[in-house]
Amino acid sequence: MTAGTIETLVGVQEIDSRHRSLLQRIADCQAELESKEIELAGQRTSVEAMRSSSNAAATRRRELEALILAKERSLKDGRMRIDRIRNERELDAAQREIESLKEGLSRHEEELLGIFEQSETTDAALGTEEAALAASETDNEALTKRAHDEIAELQKDIATDSAERERLAGLIQPALRQEYEKIRQRRAGLAVAQMRDGSCMGCRMRLRPQLANDLLRGEAIQKCPGCNRFLFHRDETADAAASG
Ligand SMILES: [Zn+2]
Image (spheres, rainbow, N blue to C red):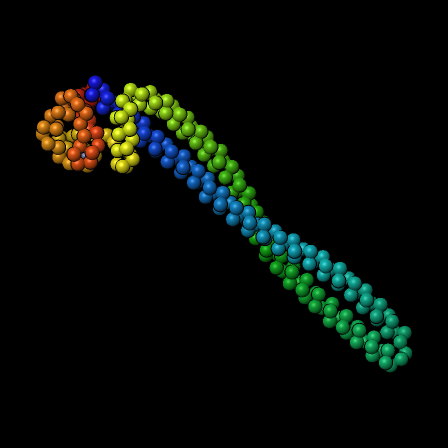
């Protein structure tokens, strides 16, 4: 009965260890997805900022083109007017106005030229970034699908394991089950340790010959005096012969 019980505990522990690594893989998948999502959000923000500055430049370009057109018209009108002025003072005023229009016009033209030059660089960079973002979005879609499939698969494995664990745990006395849980929590997920060559594989402590013999006879559940884990023994030569 005890040998069966300890084998059952070993079975439960195998499931628990597998469970833990499956959960870890799910967490890894989710962490990878999150970090990709953060990366992508950064890329989107940067493309958005570039787009909005490109739009602002286009708006300013249109404003300047309209201003330049208006000033050119005023300049033409002013020049036509000046031909008809005969009064010295009015002529002075009209000439000053023309000078100021010309100054304004050259300022606008200079700014427009600057915008054209800058837009050439920034729009090319925007194009590159947009293409990179589109590629990242496609990659991320594929990654997300793959990760979700993998997570679903892992969850299915966990569910299958859970059913088997429940069945096995049902075979163990409740007090022993509780003890198993307690030791597992305290001992980094390992509550049942194998005895090999007279030593506990949980803590590497050499066991007293008497304890080793008791364990080999399998009359009662034995625990390691060093780490307090349940001990089990397996005849590995027989295993090797059977499998080999
Ligand atoms: Zn030990």
